[in-house]
Length: 197
Image (cartoon, rainbow, N blue to C red):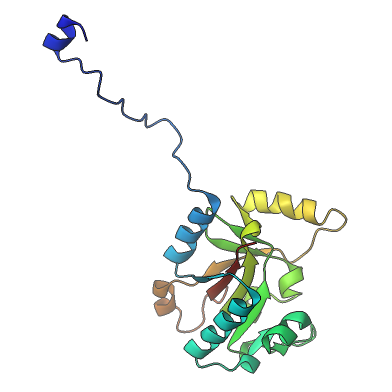
């Protein structure tokens, strides 16, 4: 430090302020998803093994006073694994069940939403499904945004892109107060069973 710098207050130890024009630093995908998902009211449990997967599913049922038979599954493998009720594609009365157990295509980090297709929900629309959805997913399904999710979806199914592609929106507590007449049934209460794979 020169003598003139000392008199006129120049201090080299000061760090320059960040420019407001620089892009904001983004969280890693898993942290960003967790923040956005839980901020909107989603609940998730990390799964370490098949034993903890079944235990957490049973705990969700216990917490809500459900029997596994009151939870539907559109996948027969899930039905035998979890003891849920398998539903054929032709069935139309899904709302008679307390919840649905499904998988997903991708977890959208920047919004906390979940990308689904016909591979998970068949021909049914979101309003057809029960109000609570239990989603089984893996960490490897995290993507930055819907655009990246759609790109990955096209690469995953190069021959035929699935239909009925939609995002599952979490029903917030404030929305629940407004929604006593089931006005907005596309948003759901969501439990996420997240495997570290």
